[in-house]
Image: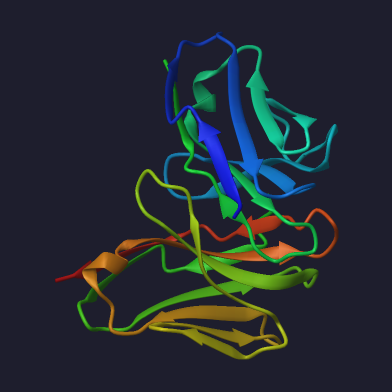
Amino acid sequence: SQTIHQWPATLVQPVGSPLSLECTVEGTSNPNLYWYRQAAGRGLQLLFYSVGIGQISSEVPQNLSASRPQDRQFILSSKKLLLSDSGFYLCAWGEQGFFGYTFGSGTRLTVV
Amino acid sequence: QQQVKQSPQSLIVQKGGISIINCAYENTAFDYFPWYQQFPGKGPALLIAIRPDVSEKKEGRFTISFNKSAKQFSLHIMDSQPGDSATYFCAAIGTGSARQLTFGSGTQLTVLP
């Protein structure tokens, strides 16, 4: 069965520090991968998606970047965090041509 | 630009009552409409989903009604229970290989015991 792992679960980082959040998927190959952010309140905003290794599409200009170094690994990064980067970050995967998304358990990032 | 509009923002229902959440979409390039349930501190979990060529889908106490001509769809939770208290998101998946998922703004449901 397929599983998605996302870590860390919580993170407190000072302003100006770097960020690296990792997401891996098991039990499938060539998945679509997504990073979402959920700010205070409830809305989910698509940040990046990838349909293959090295292929990254950005939905919103950010202080963030994403990379997909391996087929089932998706990384969200920042060189210098801003206070506004605080939020709940969610990784998700979907099989190409399939209609379902599975989300990871999320990372609660607090920038102080 | 919000392409999926969801209402109400919050909903309080008595145990055993019916919870109804409505969504409307603007972009016709969607071909799948899932609903997600999210508990605090957790990632959203797929609850139920429907294709636009189907007018209704029922799974247990959860029913999606879909009106393609009006570009509207809704979630009905029958016999609502306190354990249903969560945030519910409607969503739409776009056509194309990226299969991007656009969320509504969410509805915080509280079911009173």
